[in-house]
Image (cartoon, rainbow, N blue to C red; front, side, top):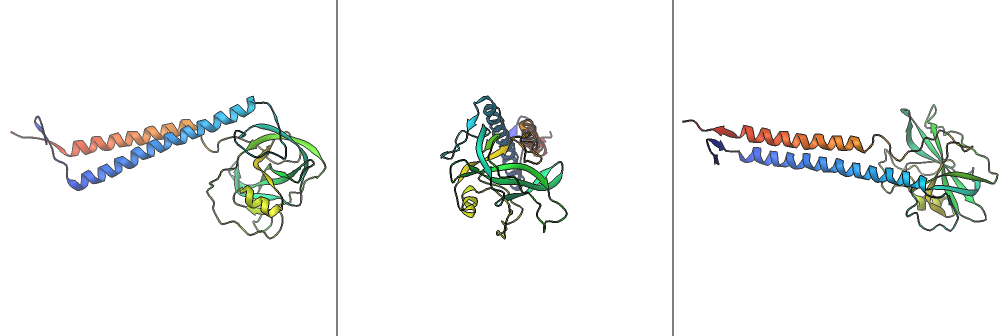
Length: 241
């Protein structure tokens, strides 16, 4: 192809490779923008939950729609004998568990899983930590969280040998079956000032915020532009004479 005194003559394979790489780089850029939008939505939900009135959690809750990060209170008592340890949770660079304790709702055969916070792993994975809790009736306060449907797991779920049970993800229906009674479709994040808890620093995002994703997107798009410029420059030659 002639463009004035310049000839653009790309080879077939360099063109194919360049197109594939361009597509990949642009896709990565849009993926980062999508991740940024998802994080903004989570932050909006988190902030919106603070502005709403405190929800009195009851046993007849059927749907978790619109309840993510909603402030709530619930009355009942802990079930200390049937607790779960959510595996591979980190805090300040240290590996440990998040303690999930069924909280029996007053006057009902229904419970809600209360996340009482993070505890360190201990000396060995073969010995589970002691997480007993008092079982007297009380009212607790916290935030509601809808468990994610898809979670990256480092290993398979261990079959339950006893209690507490170490789990890799929160599957409400499966945990309800193990307990032999219904669980509400949300997890109750226990407020930091509430007793009977461990390390609690609840936040909607783990890692960095949406601004970093936007910065990464700009980098991917920048690499795509750079690749295109190199491709054009390498395959464009000045006609002599």
